[in-house]
Image (cartoon, rainbow, N blue to C red; front, side, top):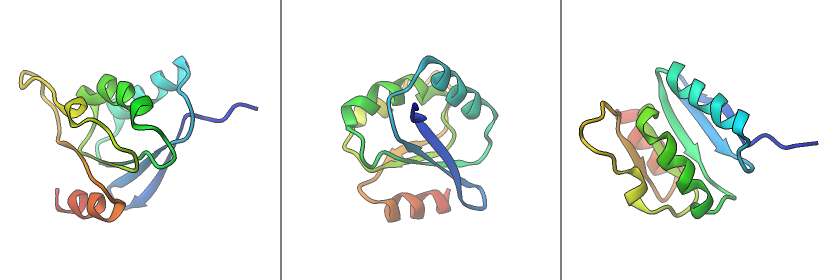
Length: 108
């Protein structure tokens, strides 16, 4: 049985948690892209149990379409979150802890 690469669950009104759980298949990349396209709320990305290296390439790929997002749980290079100003993008930040990430999301 294959594990899914991510799970999406509600945290509280207007905030969903996306937890990275395994390597992404092509279909899961497409599914996550569809979610980002359709979702209008805020997102908490939980990388606990993942390597930052593994996640960085996906974060860089998805960055232009991410909703307002707080990321925590694995060390990532902040450069991955940078994007040219020509894009219409929402803010995405990295935090050391889930508490800091949620506090920031609530203030957005």
